[in-house]
Image (tube, rainbow, N blue to C red):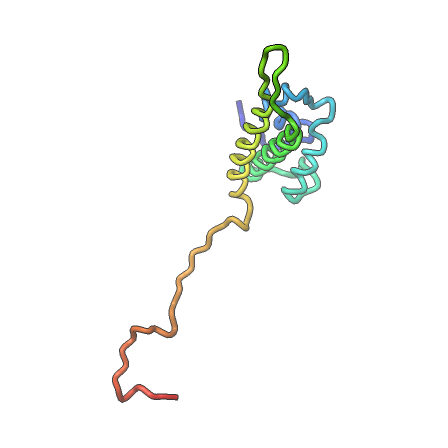
Length: 145
C-alpha cells in the first residue's frame, strides 16, 4: 500500500476515524454523521491553510496527519471529560478509563506535533564573554576609571 500523496476533507475524516479506532466506535462517532467536520476545520486552522487538497509532499502530509491526530484525540478528551465510574446491578463500570487513555494518547500526539511548532525548536549559539574575569592584565595596563 502506497502512502497518501494528498487528502480531501472526506479522506482526512476517514483517517481521523481510523486513528481513533475502537474509541470512535465506543463513542458512536462516524464520518457520515459529521463528527469529524469541525475537527478537520481545526486541523486546517492549526496547519495554516484553507484547503486540504493543496497540501502535498511527504513532509507536509506527515504534518497534516500528525495535527489531525492531535485534534481527534483532543476532541475525545473533551467528549469524555464528564465520564465517571459507577456501580449498578452488582457490576462496576469504569467509564473514566477512556478519558484517561485519551489524555495519554493526546499527550503522545502533541509530543509528535511539537516537531512542527517553531516555538519548540532548540537553538544553540556560542556565548562569547566580552569581560573575562580571569583575563590577566599587567599592572601597568590597569587603570582606575
